[in-house]
Image (cartoon, rainbow, N blue to C red; front, side, top):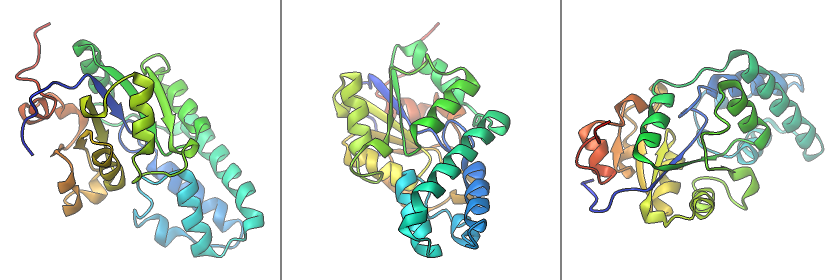
Length: 233
């Protein structure tokens, strides 16, 4: 969508599917936990419809689909989160270019934050597994906001914690709902879709679509960030 005159000063990262490959973990654990109640959510969980949603919003959708009672919902969500945290500690992998992107931001002197739909225990598990706890100036969860993505509140909270104007922030997202949220927050957005949603025309809302975070130094990405070239070491 063209270059920006002013360079960004902060970068806000989504987490699930952007920094770490947790989508298969969420899907497996969720399917197993709902199955333990006699409910099959595998068709909808595999469809990608919850991509980018907060845990609470995803649970609302799954429980409505599966006919799970409100009385069972809270305990089920806790079991799922606990299962995901356990699996992250054993099996989670960083997405291609995740550390590269963080190192690049450090090199440019950009403040970085996480703005995710995951719950704080899951965020903590990811940061601990990969030793990333000290890399972010702010960590924000949409579970602590009145509304999850595609509402912009979690991104606006992240910008406020960074002490930054939204227009000086770049959002990196893998989900359409996250891209919508970033643009609604008046931020620049670079999308990095997963293979299962690659080519979805809705990503046109982003300023740019990249195949991976390894391409964050491409000329087109630098233009979105308001940079003429990669600064010399």
